[in-house]
Length: 372
Image 1: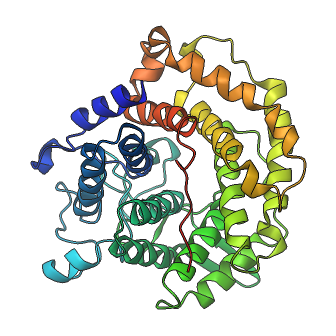
Image 2: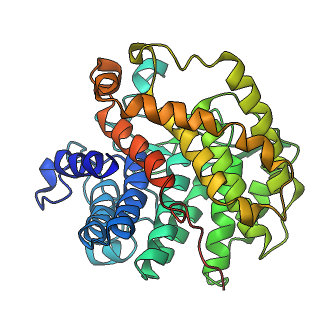
């Protein structure tokens, strides 16, 4: 099923098509798609999927590293000349890939319209960074580590300090010159810190992450990462694995320690379990949010042996694996994928379901980088 879903996604979004006008790129969805293609390549021993992963990475950078065709501006959003921009496609971030152009600085803020407008999301950056680091290992291509590191450092533009208060803007303009949404994502400091630390270790200090990491560490201090949102819980579980891997190579602040993240995730899972209605119709459910949770559960289950030295009470999470079973079984039934609630978000739903299914059969689906 995962293979079929990803083949459909590749055809529908034009990954095999060199005509950029027929391509449909969206950074969050494409990040998981890269990992899915690499997992399919391993599972089926089929290099076609490695080709798709490489092609998708190139398309994302060529499309989302440039201004949209409808924009009055053209070229790389970094402002670099063509040849230099090709070498550094992520150095000033990547667009989201929304259909509508970003809100101008002088336009009034409309929260409903903002969902459909382009710009740059911090939490999409961190998701693409992980995809690039994962692909760098699977494709043996260190150039992708450079792209990931430059994208990570572009996150400095999201930082804002006023007096003793600091935050990460949730959404910035395409050229990173002004904020579009001033609030801060609940897990953005955590995601930013872990990805920046990964990049620092993998680049052997070729890039200076010192000040950026210090700012992010301050934002993480004293934070509770608890949430009962299924997508947020799934991301938190993925960060448990990343934190545990990083802890083997460097000292971590208590605020991002794997045990801290795991304990907060368990609390959130208990709350989610109380209110979750996984027997309701797909008309009232969002597959990609639920599959984000089942993905996190599958990945932590795969990494239990590696987590045993840093996280206690892993048995508690084993009791929650039935949630992943229920979510996957429900969305694997074709009749539950025919309603508008699924069809309206077809790409991200296909890719998220495939991610969860693949994580259940590929133990290294979410493999973290091999640090020197």
